[in-house]
Image (cartoon, rainbow, N blue to C red; front, top):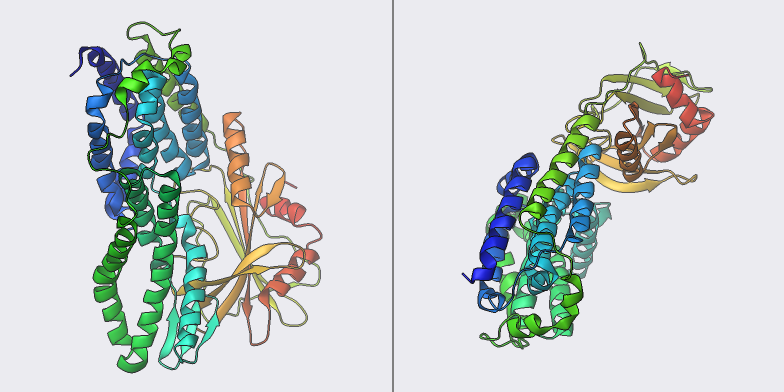
Length: 502
């Protein structure tokens, strides 16, 4: 090891140890996702890839002298603030970005901008440690369904598509979440980014290869889904399902990966022995000199990093301890033109509202016989496991026969979703939130308001309202829900009365 690297690396090790210790729960949560979720299993290889990328630069890095850079603490503060916002709002993506960003920022602060520039790609590639991608599932389901129906019709098979359900002579097929292709897409983006960096020198070729790594698995997944339907026409659904899991699951996407690398191979323009960085040129670059004039001495910088992380964790702990006072009871108000009635549903439906401190449910029916099922939930605290609007919460209960069918839009701009059970039971639903005088449907807006309140140590309750209407033949449940909302004479006041605050 070059002598000038020994002390800075020891300081970096101390700073990383403090960050890992203080944010251990988030690292453990990420590691659990890498291990348990097949969508993120590929991330288990990313730490080894990062170590290899740094090792490839070792000889050139030895030409440089690390110089601590105190403005790097502002980058660390930004990363810790992102973590704080995610922790307070329950947005795991933000907390995970924050813990990874804190490691990146500590490298910049302790080793300096010159070394950080030399390590630019490994530092950026560390973002692949963040388990993100499940948010793409609904969009990928629709894209896969569109590709599948187009290929099915082109192959001469009569078919009808309804959202993510495709009806064929062999049976009804669903482009389920597991069929969206998100697992392969996320892994291919990570692979494509690595190959683009290692095997190409041209920026245009790198961008083109990454774009191909995104487009190719999406198209391939549509072909895979069509192939399952095509085989089912002659061999039956049972055979097609087994064929899909064994042949496509293990061989098809391996072939797609080989095709991607094969297409790129003839355009590789970087020599195998070409160094990733020029250490001597970087050491001589005068541009970085302006950033190296003011440097903290000794161990002050890693200690400052640890202190900032500790202060942020303490802030989060105080904010998480907040709990709003709830009214003695909650009761759904009357609605003009609608009367209370027993719920009439051909198939049971129970939304998921985990951790709610109070839940009230009722059904309303108008003179035309249309029914709206209302579920109102009140939360004293927004935290992990008891968060309104979290993934898997709401009108579409996970691990049930209910499936997402399509998005709906009301004439007044409200959005919702249509769900389907057993291929024939349909429901339209809308989800609304109320907190601190705001009523709306945006989960992001709710998270932002929750962040603001917790940062300012304001304890406020959060309410979730789910309106759902079972659809009969020729009936549009979203229109029924719209008429119900308009009959409340103001949904915000109606929700406030339900909470007992008015």
